[in-house]
Structure formats: C-alpha cells, structure tokens
Image 1 (spheres, rainbow, N blue to C red):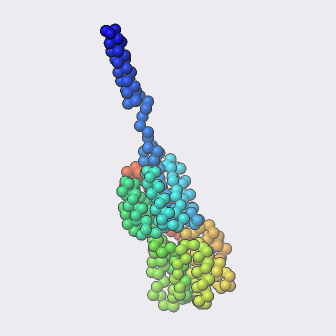
Image 2 (image 1 turned 120 degrees about the horizontal axis):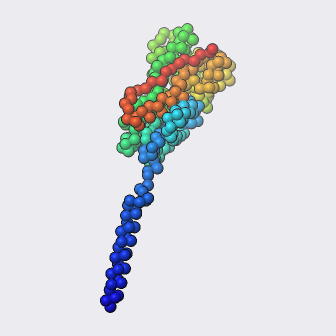
Image 3 (image 1 turned 45 degrees about the horizontal axis):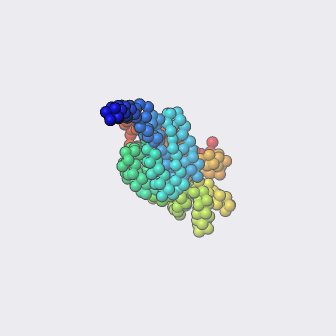
Length: 314
C-alpha cells in the first residue's frame, strides 16, 4: 500500500510539471495572437475609394490617377463602385469600414444622403476625404475638387462670347443633390443671368448621362426651335445633346464639362464648341497623396483645389 502511494505521488508530480511546461509554451512560445487582416492593423496603408459610378469615363480616369498614386506610395487601394445608387454606395462604405481601412475617400452619389455613411466612418475612427463632390455633413478632413462654380462661370462666359452676347441657351443639369450639379449651375447662372438679350430657354436634368442627354435635348428641341447654345454640366450629357442636335440639322454651340477623351475629340473636330477640363487624373492623384499625409498624422487644408482649363479647338 505504501509503495502504491509513493508511485501515485510521483505520477501526480510529473503530470503537474508537464502541464506547467505546456501552459508556458502557449503563452510565451510560438503561438501568437492573430494579426488583424484589415488595413489599419498592417504595416501597409489601405485606402478605400467609393466612386459614384465607373460607367462614366471621368470617374474611370479619376480612379486610374488614384491607383497610380497609391502604387507609388506603396499603399493598397480598395475601390467600390456605387453605380449611381445611393443605397449601394452606403453599403459599400460600410464594407470598407468593416475591412478597417486606414482612410476612406468618397465621391458621393448624393451629397445629402452620403452624410450617414460619413458619420459611420467617423464613429469607427476612420478619417474621410471627399473627392470631386462634397458631403453636406459629417466630419470630413478635406475636400479635393476643381472649383465647380468657377468652371460653370467659365463655361457661361465662353458661351456669351461665342454668341456675341445675345441668344437662347439650354442648360442640361446633372444629378439633383450632387454638389457638382449645384455648383456648376450656380457658376453658369452667375455668368448669364440678367444679361440683356440672353435667355436660359430651358433648364432640365439629364443626370450626367449620355442617353438621357440625348432624349432630354430631343424633347427640348421639339418645343424650342430658337436655340443657339447648350451648356451641359458634364461631357456625357453634352455628347448626348450633340447627337440630338446633329439629327435635327441645327447649328448649336455645345459646351460641356470634364474634358473626357470623347469630348476633346469632338471639340477638335469642331462638333463641340468647348469643354471645361477639371483633370480627373490629377484629382485622383491629389486625393491619394493627401490621404497618405492624413494617415501619417500630417495637417492638410480643408479644401484642396485642382486647376481648371477651358478646352477649345486647337
């Protein structure tokens, strides 16, 4: 019996020693806590970019500029396409928040509706930059865009010069609720309103879309025979309006905004009168470079403008 007790005691002692070694191995050895796979926890910066739509050449170029700058900075860029759907954009931003990206750049589909998504990012501690179009609320570190009011005014003044200060003008508006549509329209009206002999004969939305630009312009031409010029808030609508004008056989000056490749080609061929270049690749580049500064804790201006340029036939 005595012998049995001694063996049992030795067995318990050995078991306790082994258990102690095993515990020490788990806490101090090779088993480490898993690293967070999100951008915020890794050494490489991860920047989210929510684009209103990649069905528009302007925003494709903006994205390309951002991707190039991210590659040069050694950062990872995650792009989500809202396809001009506000609910889809908010959902995409929530996904970026879940991925724990270091910063989110937003090109809003709707400046009012996007506020909830901006506030969600704020709550998660993720800084937000708006690009090309502003948000009407939430905490935004900086806004990077061309001066759309100045661009609209530039277009209006060029139209007045082209018409010799007299004529009837059509305005094709962008998506209601976007800062770009609001500001470009504001600048345009600052240039043309109240001028003797000048009338804005029609001002209708075509949602920054080429097909809608075509159909809206067709309808306007049916009801307004005496039109001398068109100002479209973007080139896609301008090119759609141009199709309608060509089909009607009329000679009407068309001025767009964005300076997309198709628009510049139309200007150089003498089909469009002009387009306002706001350099989307430069906007994307500036956005990423600013994002890197923000992530590193550097201070940036609340508004970072990108130069505009009026493009006419060479």
